[in-house]
Image 1 (cartoon, one colour):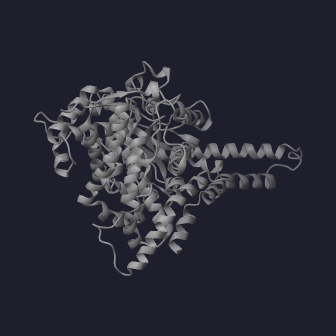
Image 2 (image 1 turned 135 degrees about the horizontal axis):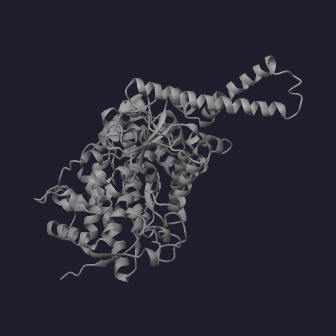
Image 3 (image 1 turned 90 degrees about the vertical axis):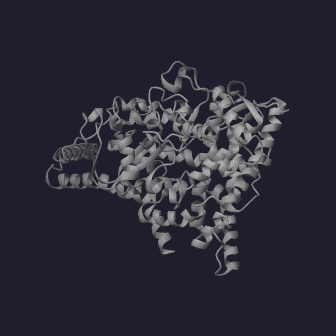
Length: 595
């Protein structure tokens, strides 16, 4: 209990905000008091407006001097090490408030790659939001250094953990250092081995989804594959993680084309499932908006934590299941469930007693395994719809190796093009496009054109670092001039085998290093089984976004003719921690003729 209490106090954003405000306003107040008491005659401050004016003047001078001195000190430290500092963006408004505003506006109206214009010829820029350092990088060497080479120098950081606490609680995705290592140690055995029962579970739900696809294909109507795959993956997560088959979202009525209420994702809007989905969506949106506001986000939520209401909805789903698992643990006594037999919730209950911590870990793994897999499958179907030659090639491979029946690990391993399609989709649309980090100690990182090739200096003190996996995955000097095109063949060698690319260290859909995704093989298998089942019965895929998606879901007219994928995109990719398609992704599938 003491450990839990210390964690909660440590992640209390209101306490952190008060401390930051004292640090910010305390020194000017002391200086003002000294000036009033010993320097400025009382007669000068007799007017009502004189004292406030003097305080504002002192505060502006103090903060300006502090910022300038700090930046000067950083430049001197960098110079001693033969390095330079990454240049800051220069906005038109103080504190680069205009750049922050553009970022928030882009979340609503822009393309997810719009921020790449800030890179210019370089790979890293300092956003300088609210007079702080916020580094954004797409440098393969910088990202590799932060994730795998020197991960201890680049933790998530307390500020980021506190920001994400509203969504992830004290779960592994908002935990750092030794604490995170302990949590991963608890989880690793459960995800370490391929289990036959996992394949049976995945294929059982794939067949349920396939029945819905078959029914909609026979009627000639499109289906929101994003909605379908979210149902598919959350039903799997319900049984695999929570030991419950009561979700049954695949048994609920599907949204009809052209009849979905306008919304962010176009998923089911009513009932317990829709309420939970909406709550999780809002938690993601709030977390992204918090990150854009920088350290000042706590000011906007000091009186009301925007995540509280939505966490309540999630609690009503998860906490009863946790209580049941703890009760079953009591009945077992000292006997633990075998790792090969139990569900994840049982494994957690055997490893810890605190219901809140179990709830947080379950929700963290739920989001990591559900939303990300649904995102990948959605974008695969999008690509198969707009690249029919890729769809035909994938179907040829699948029907040659396994024309019907349940996929196995051996059959999946033989499908080289299937893995290539998945990798290429993960490259262009990584489910988690940005990985947040912080600088624990001062360090040097590889420079770029903006530093004239010199190494760059990153100060210590929880400086925010955003690793843009999305931007790295589309760099032309890494992936070639066709970097923004869907080319699965880049993953296959001349002998038709899976190719280990020279730029494999620039591919991070699952992260890397000690915080790499524990369930990535499960995710590959989940997506592979679903795609195999679909391609076994369907041979054509037609995107029906303009005709069937809710109003406002298609890309704006202003995108047409824009450089890169933005100018050719036929759906509206958006991000709220994970990537999704605005309004859903509506695809009409054609059943293959069978003799």
